[in-house]
Image (cartoon, rainbow, N blue to C red; front, top):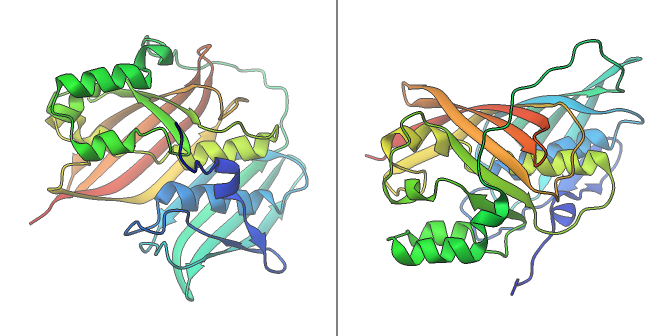
Length: 286
């Protein structure tokens, strides 16, 4: 039974406080820091509020300071360009007068293209194979850490079904490739921009865990300190964030206390809908 489930539409919603300035809040007041995906999603939502036509085709953002869940987030949008095909916005998030996040967002009105191709979706079992009941059975058979169990509880705004569950108990993924099914836990309105913002929110969920896959460790390891440094995302084709989407992740490089993670997101029918890249600080605690 779900308990007090807050939907993504409510989490991403912002209050207008004059001009192109918006106020957002974090729903997780008990956390030590604001979830990066929340800031990404809300900043993108703020940018969408200033566009008359077109949908986001890409975003590039930097995390400058850790956000405090107890303090409201102020999003200021700058209208850099409104062109025939593309528009550009800069969004800055501040708390108590200090900038904690900055992003650039591009919008495209859409057009017919001559060239059309995409990578194929990895061959993994359907999300029903990894239902909560199946995860519970695996958890009983293994020493699954409590923090991992809580991460996949059904009261979260995004429902997650990991494919490589063994990595949470020390299994090494030699090629570093991870897969996870995900979808908004509550049905969303039929607003394409909102679905894009919802996916931007979800795209930050344990993406950096791909860095640890080769070592048989996870970001839930208390000896690991991690934090997102930047995040880039490209939106390719239509989708619904409240339908199952496959998040395929890998990490091509880690060095100097930083790790790079990449992701491709597919619809169930194999359609590639988005690509992601993120670099983060990944260190062992002293």
